[in-house]
Amino acid sequence: MIELLTADTPNGWKISIALEEMNLPYVFRHIKLAEGEQKEPWYLALNPNGRIPTLIDHDANDFAVFESGAILVYLAEKSDMLLPKDVQGRSLVMQWLMFQMGGIGPMMGQANVFFRYAPEKIPYAIERYQREVRRLFEVLDRRLADHTYLAGDYSIADIATWSWVQGHDWSGVSLSCLAHLERWHDAIAARPAVQRGKAVPPATGPSEQRIEGARKLLV
Image 1 (tube, rainbow, N blue to C red):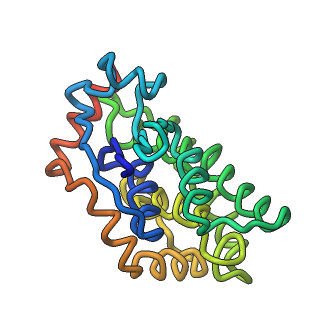
Image 2 (cartoon, helix red, strand yellow):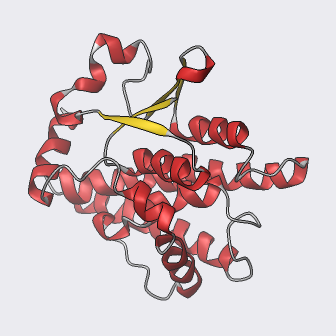
Image 3 (cartoon, rainbow, N blue to C red):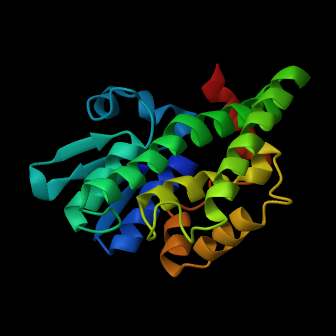
């Protein structure tokens, strides 16, 4: 059995969506970030970075995996799905997965902090990160102009990237004039497994409550 320790964030949704797409049986434990559960000793023994998600494969001697990108690769190899076996095909997926991990996620995360969570609004920081997010979205749009998905067939790279891009409004960044990215976004959003995975775990509350919880994490 696979156990997913997670919360309702883009990095968390990556894994629950992947598990649903792969039809792998799993259970989940909702880690309450605002209460600092991810910093408790028992959790740090599994995930030294004190972040979500963490996966425990109880069928493999309770093997624990942290970092969402590493978890996606682990699950793809375990299920033999959503990651090509040939060297070039695998490399292409990994390139776009790393693009998300090193670009889309961090830049949208910073946009979220300064646009939504920071008690002091700093226009330079907000504009800087929103502008960079938009630039990265334009990179995706150009790629998707002549590709249905980011790396050939639907893959873990699409799951990882969509989990962040779907929250573009929260970052204050529009998808306007990015027709190819919008097409890709809407097609993935319509997938039943994506809808099921996005609902794990249930939302923690209204926007105001989530903002207050996020601010606690920034202290």
